[in-house]
Image 1: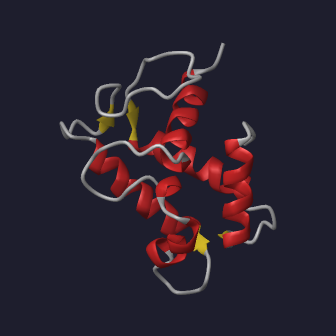
Image 2: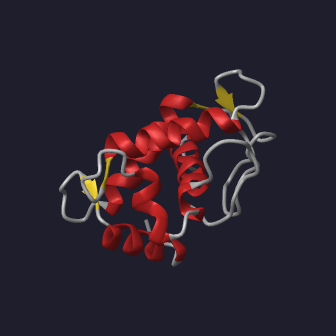
Amino acid sequence: MKSVFASAAATAAALLLSAVPVHAKGPPPIGSIPLSEVLATLDRNGNGCIDLEEGRNYVSRRFHALDRNDDDSIDAVEAPPMAGETSASRPIGLNDWQDAYHARFDGFDTDRSGCLSLAEIEAGRSAADAGGR
């Protein structure tokens, strides 16, 4: 049985990096952004890759866009559970949402540079689509 944090992390990671958009105002899920546009969308400092802070800022904006009732958590109504989850139970708060992104970032950052290249993002997306990371 998954822990609450593991379930929340899986939920946040699926929402953040899946190609299935959740309808809300604000930035789209990272996974729905075409790879060719990822750097232009997330690379705010222009260094050619996505560092952890840039990603966390992006997913924080996404979190607040999904939190339609402004209760500082995302529940199953605001973001329905994804296939494969063991429970429809939520909510997930911003800290857990960001922690889940951090864990996913670490899984994608294969060269441990602290910055995701397009090649790492593409490989991470492929692995996630295949049921990996």
